[in-house]
Amino acid sequence: MTITIKDDAGIEAMRKACRLAAEVLDAITPHIVPGITTLEIDRLAAEHMALQGTKSATVGYQPPGYPPYPAHLCTSVNHVVCHGIPNEKTLKKGDIVNVDVTVITPEGWYGDTSRMFLIGDCSIASKRLCSLTYESMWHGITQVKPGARLGDIGHAIQKFIEGHGLSIVREFCGHGIGQKFHEDPQVLHYGRPGTGEELLPGMIFTIEPMVNIGRREIKELNDGWTIVTKDRSLSAQWEHTVLVTPTGYEVLSLSEGSPAIPDFVHSASSVAA
Ligand code: MF3
Ligand code: CO
Ligand code: CO
Image (cartoon, rainbow, N blue to C red):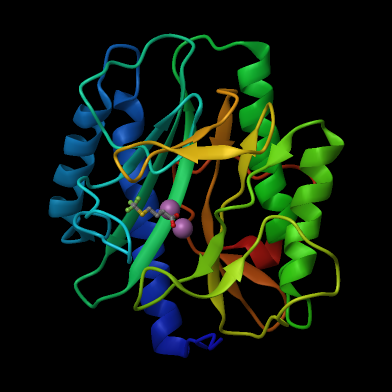
């Protein structure tokens, strides 16, 4: 395992990449309403990327054993856990959808972030799932500082989620990111405190917990990408890209449209973008 340490120029380049990814989410947010299709969301995002001068990292993305990914972003609706492929189906009131955007800047740096969207009025259970998943991501983020270990992040997320009777997906994880989409380390969303790689200033990785209302087991659909919950229970995910700073962390994928940071996140100086 080789975790890249970004220098000042790399960090500045990643600030830009991650902000631009977040701004794609900002741009499409007003359009994510009942009646829109996920393919229309994809098209709007593609237009905004063209305007920014970024490229989608997901179009044609093909890890070993996968077919090329066909879209500019991922749209994971209701019981879809992740990697949902945009299609012609309209979103309807009560749906929840994760939109996951990864852009590449002209300089070759990757920014990766995702948010949940509630379509019209949603059930109490859906709202609770989305907000607890969001909080769990921040419980992970607030562990980040030099000397902490990856297991501290996973443990904080797992403890919070399982403490609320929800389950954490184990097959997918956060990841290092920079001049490649997916780098070392793997950032598990479960684990034991004090275990795993030690965090050092200049590391950049994503934290992106996938949380199910029901059981944690998943299955892959025949398209080779879409991951759903085995029991068809609802699933949610949020994702930020985070830098380890000399004193703590900096969340790189913040933008004007980012939802409010939870109250328990106190260290305001470390969260400034
Ligand atoms: N953006 C996803 C992540 O957070 C990866 C999507 S790969 C795709 O790592 F091909 F499905 F788009
Ligand atoms: Co992502
Ligand atoms: Co990611």
